[in-house]
Amino acid sequence: MAELTFLDSEIIVSKTDTKGKITYGNELFLKLSGYAESDILGQPHNIVRHKDMPRIIFKLLWDYIQAGTEINAYVINKSKDGDYYWVLANVTASYDSNGKIVGYYSVRRKPTTKALNVIQPLYKKLLNAEKSAGMDASLKIINELLELNGGRYDKFILSL
View 1: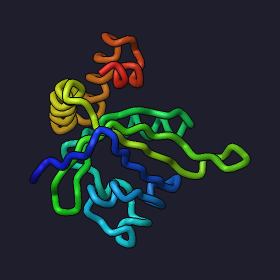
View 2: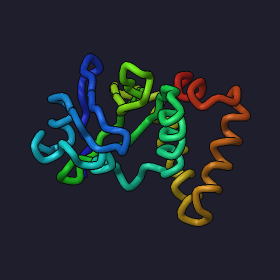
View 3: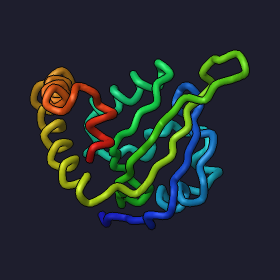
View 4: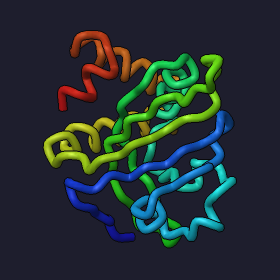
């Protein structure tokens, strides 16, 4: 497995419906994921979920966006052939004209090395906690970390 990279100036974009099924992916998303548009549309977005991604981060992500609150999170994704790539994702809800959530929109940038130096060991710790004691254990780690960093997940992520 090799790490894939992209330029600082490039942006990955995808959209999903409210169930997380992909409705759009830009050219860079398709390139990095290794899927043709016809193969990925309608598939669950977790088709690109890497095994080293802690479940608690996705729980936080879903809690935020289902409440209509945007979230920033570092994510490791996998490509069709098993390669991987890191992103800083900004995920927001998409609304219809009546203010009802109709889907989600994700814009992802290349993360900094400085941020990954913090995130990679944290995610390893979260994964180990999840494997040994479940998601409650990783939530406890996140909450303790946030107490030390102003109490808000979004502020912590954007401070890296």
